[in-house]
Length: 360
View 1 (cartoon, rainbow, N blue to C red):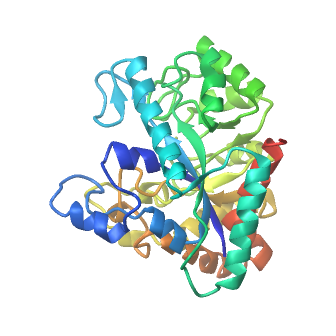
View 2: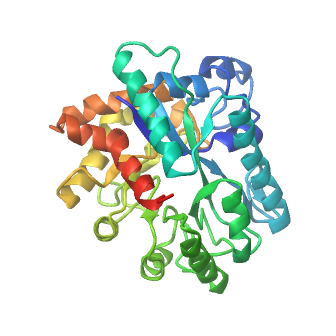
């Protein structure tokens, strides 16, 4: 079955972590075998692995923050530097498309033609993963710090950006993110207004609770939560509360389940806990929780965040590469999801969101 993943840091991995994603996962692991640090030599994502996993489409991020005392490879002292880093990541996606490694999907007609080609291939190659169409990429932004000012948004849209999450961890330039209790500042409110005028999609992932509720109040356009799990199962501000899930359902939003282990089970610690504590069935548990609140399967999907600064060591133990995302269909079937429900979660729900947001 086809799948769509709403959160992969492809360009960040390629440029900031120097991974040639046109190579196999195993080649990349071999090249990093002597490197130290979380995720090194443990990567799970590459373009060939996407094809094997029938990931017909993904949301590929641009990611850079402004924080002069922050983390290397993600934080920059000034907006100009964050802008330049993000522009480089944007250029990477255009380079992949120019070399036919991927397709940039920016409008409804492209989306429909791309998915139709993948569905035709999928029907004809039930047990094979050769000669697939190229994966499609919808460019999204995780943390709006690289946007120099809200009036610059048309420039980003013209370059292919279609989804924006205003914040990441900490206090960002436009809004409070994970680990804060602040909402949107004046520039952030202007950004929301510009976002709505542009017709782009707002991603509420990583917003503080205060910013989350402000976003739903101030923004009338399309809303998603690209990679979130459930606070009822893993108590942490990074997760969505049942009240927030219900509010997103009321807006006909879709919530992508993340595969980060610390977001799947409570009390998991980097470097101390083992990844055998969570499986792909654990991901299905979070998806099922969203579906139980909704009363249907129309609001849950995939936003894996694989290789988002971690690797196999912090992913479900039964996931070797992103190709194993196909195991999620079996895990959902074991929870009595029927074929239509499984298709909704695997790819149809994200298709509905994009088709509704893109009228052209």
